[in-house]
Amino acid sequence: MEKILNEKTVISPKAVVSPKAVIGLGVKVGHFSIIEEGVTLCPNVEIHTSAVIHKGTTLGKGVRVFHSAVVGSEPHDLKFKGELTTAEVGENTVIREFCTISRGTAARGKTVIGSNCYLMAYVHIPHDSIIGNNVIMANAINMGGHVVIDDWAIIGGLAGIHQFVHIGAHSFIAFSSRVTQDVPPYILAGGYPLNYKGLNLVGLKRRGFSDEQLRHIKQAYNYIYGSTYNISDAIKAVKDSVPMTEEVKNIITFIEQSERGIIRK
Image (cartoon, rainbow, N blue to C red; front, side, top):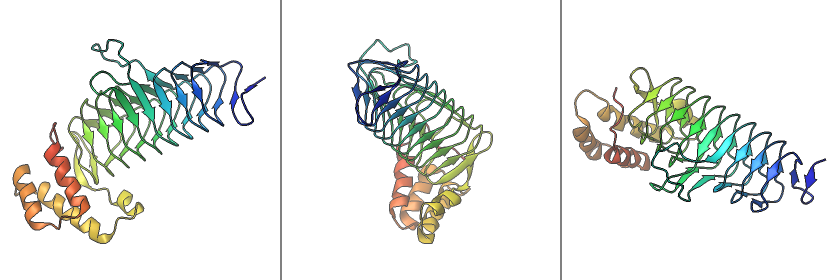
């Protein structure tokens, strides 16, 4: 018989839940799942069967964790010495079967996944990574540590992402890509090696970008990915010739702050 903590919170008697975990109203925990001490499950979190939620993990309201996912495990990092670190997942994010999410190391102290993300089966989010809001990651994506993925990015299945890579907002990365350099915002990326394929027009239009916004983004990338300029000269040309809309500023800031260099055409 299920253990009912209150009128809305239901925990399977076959689950192992630490009395030192914080369990919110409306939480559901399925058979054989393990919730360690130091875990916080906010209201309406659902933990399906055989999942493991390790200490230091916070799951926001409405998060759903499916069969055999592991959240908040020790980092896969030989430098990790048992320091107290965290894994944080925002509201309404879905973590599908066999996903693995490691908590942070001393380098950043935490791994963070935003709200309304969708992580499909076998995705691995490693230590010290920062995933924005509304990010979709398809099946079997593997990443190195310290990766940053900005809001609304979509990553195709079987992609491999090098450590310390930065993927920009509203970008779309093709299936089975090998991502070793930074991917600027608003673009499509694909091919071998990974390269610029144009704007993510379908995604941008779905999210309400106007024709004027798209035109300015396109103008900026015509300089950046044209044959006339190198990157530094292209950025200067953009500043001189393209209206400084919020999107154009985002592009310039992203490229100027890139540590691994951006993908090319």
